[in-house]
Image (cartoon, rainbow, N blue to C red; front, side, top):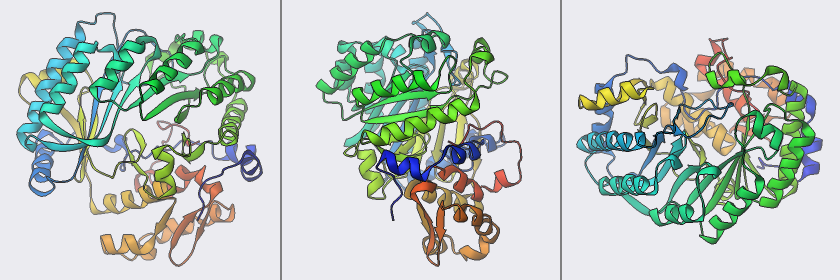
Length: 469
């Protein structure tokens, strides 16, 4: 079965602008199932501690993933919807580091020291807001508490305006082997409109330096639909990205929700591209990346053919977590820092969203958990179905039936019936063995996965989600 296109011509023949417009609807990204909007305050610190101790007793040998949220930024990017704190007071990061230490100690008290770590991601905010010394302290603290295995994925998000060659070398020395540069757009007018000016020459130089330092993979983030963007201006950015040739590309759609995200109120609605222009940008971007030899991994991810993410896609080893697609096996995720979301066993949980609440819990010697969810059997079944579709591009009925002791066709009779229209459009094929997503359907995989979302089927309020393509 093939679930990827490899030629620009194939894309233009298989996916029309009309199809992109038709499926330009809101829906979850499925970095988890159930999605975070389903978390409840009834899930408490006690529930989380129970999950940690059950893991300690039953799964001590399986690897963990760690996410650390560093919320601080030097300046405000108007498009940003992340949990961040904009400040010029770098001394605040020292205090934050001490509270992270308390949080790690609470985890090792319930997990025990030396748990195996195969994946680490520092996100934000701006992780490189931390000084080199603070990053060293953070990594030393984590390495004293956990066992980082050789060959794991250790990544950090980088604002190009905050690093130079010396800082990149320090990140490599600390053990980071993957970098993600926030680019968004190279057009100067767009950069000014979103308050994030960084010349493309600066990014090109940093990427060259990172390659010389032998980082395993370099990712760049792009956003389409920003103010002042046009299909023509974004094409120029695409051409530059083709010359830069990062190992991975994440291409996101800008969602303008000023009523939810205060920084976006500084963006003038009249400066935003029309819906048709956004779809054109998406179409042009996908076609361009395919024409310069990128593999469409899925959703908003592209990778060069030899990148581990593309290799995992070919070999059917893709996984998905809160950072998106991953090559690491599906594993528990310990989330550290304000607002961070983690997964342990059959639970998801989220930390306090404000520094005040986060610090207050830790001062009392408590985990800063404010909400979460313990998955039901139905949640577990549907999560397995959705992740199989999102990661492998197919679902075999027998695998779900054996794992969860159900009759798939009976359990999901309504859902299978709802897939008929997508099958008629060439998105997928249903046979006696399972559901097989086509190369066309892979571009709309979220629309397919949504058919199995029990919560979404009974909830028409989808405006809180991003567009699915």
